[in-house]
Length: 141
Image 1: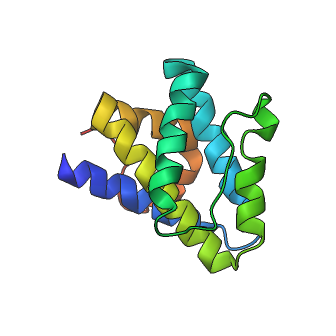
Image 2: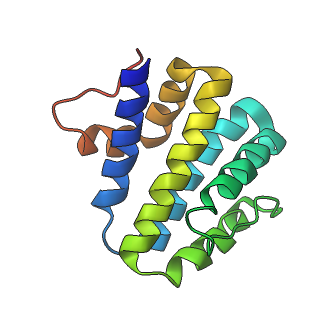
Image 3: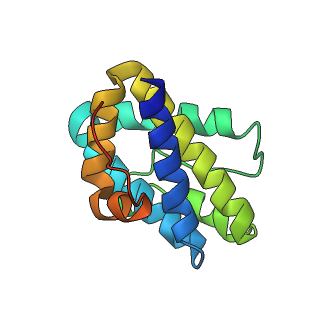
């Protein structure tokens, strides 16, 4: 189980590191892809609760990070997050997004299990995840 979470963390880091330009846009794309899958399973309220908790925990390391998960339209859900990333250096934005995604998926895995979390991420980021981790499969364990 620990190996699965380490693999999940590595995949997230690799996905973030691949996107060196337009970091804020790339971050929002990852969040939108993942949110679509999670909302279909636990609903918008469930996603918003997990997202808000993850944001709260991540703000202890990156206090400038802000977001509003209760935006009514999907296109606006991550607008505030994007603004937070745009005013930071690309490196700082990547680090914050990596920690936010790891925190979110750690909470999700603690609630629904590593296997289902991995499956959701695989569905969300299939092409990116496979490309980002050469020699390792993104598999359920």
